[in-house]
Length: 412
Image 1: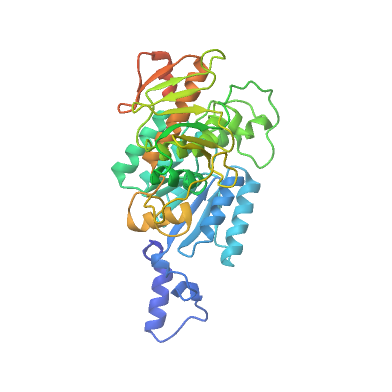
Image 2: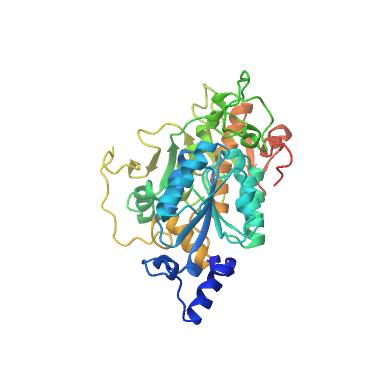
């Protein structure tokens, strides 16, 4: 989108050469928008940060879009960033993609419109806020936050600066829309309760020191997390509390996101969070002001089981315990804008300045449900939550878990 005015020497050379009647020896068709791609001035110029498995997959999805020009990749693992650079360079048949170790070399570039973030969870807020403050729109993988406070700062930053921010859970619509269509149709009566079958919280670690492998910037990998010696098991970051909320926030971002959208509660939150105690409360339980109840675990299949007055259903239409209903045609359920799923929704909103389907405020509400479940489980006691003020009521110890200390200089 800004590549034309951010590279005046190249564009000026083309204009002056043509005006003088002296064409350069070779002008790629893509430079003039003749390969069925938008002209450079209409493309969304992107950088990709965090080139592990999921990040590389997301980058590949963006590379498949004609309106995108990927110009830079970043990772603290040298092998990852070189692999990503190779993918981009082969896509464009050139060697122009920058490969960097420090995300700030991408977020500070004036010619980049948007960034894709696929780092471990503990980096999401820092990189997202830095990118937005440098005028970038953000597509961030789920779970978007490590703490509730991070989500609040990310929303405030996006709104104040007018940035488009899309969270990365494609499953909320693509996997669970069968349930959404049952709910919106009303053919099975009222929704009564939902079971979300995902993993549990992360845990602390105390692992022995190992030599740092060549090609890994360990201090940069840790970033805002506490400084600890390298151990290869920490790279599997989802297990550890310093870097992630575990399976609860990983697949919970999908599952609880689906449950919230299904029940129309995706812009609010629960009022009570009750951890399992092995006696009276068999499952971590969420209660909402309107009477809705979510359970962590249970159901009879899949990630989501939704209990309606007329039967129980999972997201998989092929394995229903209750006979699947015939649904009305043309149900009007808000979901993606533009074309091409969650990625297309984000790119459409970058161009139109609309809010995407997984806007940061909605994504934050989802991950907050997961964080609150973790806090209740870690402390082993119920929590009362004010979803309007986003405060834990009457429990100062639990409230401290809404934020974490951050290692300098990585403030948000």
